[in-house]
Length: 278
Image 1: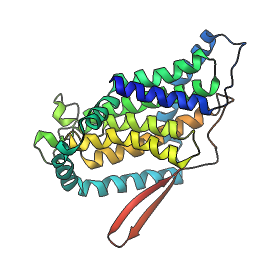
Image 2: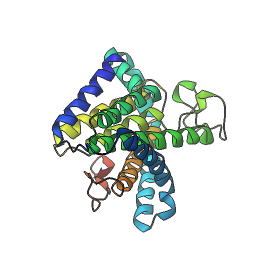
Image 3: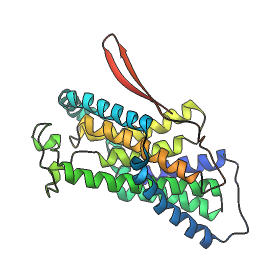
Image 4: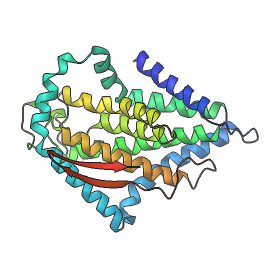
């Protein structure tokens, strides 16, 4: 855990040093804290209310998400066998990182550290980043808990097939496969932080760090590929929704309101895929 926390603190320091600090010496930290916490809860509510405002394009994105999840469903068995077979070949440090970083307690420790750093130096941009991280993790974390219990899908390690379900609040943790909580928490963090950098190399590194906990759920037998695919898309939707809401609450913006997520279907010899551009 110490290695995970140190790694993310290093990323946070790099982020702070790469930004122009916008400190406000007039407003008290207590006033800032109250304002930010309010925006955490309002951001969560905003994310949950978005489907009520979806129009044709948004429903189209939702349809593509379902298509992608459905396609991954057909690959669940071979991908699960493959990743579980290579588990012992994965270095222990990567396996530990994959498990530790996606856990809720460690996640909030990291996101809280980002926010508190911004509050300590009174930097609005870093405070806003912390609010985005915390509210996105909260929205995604609560949603995945509801879906896990409502859907009741069997985990690979349970020995059941991918289409075995025990829906509506089964108390058996072996039936909490869909979606992946580790994937949602790790990828909301990765997307929220990567949005703030222009360099594709930095973005790629951050997304790689966010993807490892997601993939780790496959080799640990905790989730199927379709669980992880759905979780990844949900993470992006939540972060984008809350980020656009925060554009109305903070002067410091790093997100272009005109930019939208673009989904493309890729067909070719021996390949089929869905690509998200943002």
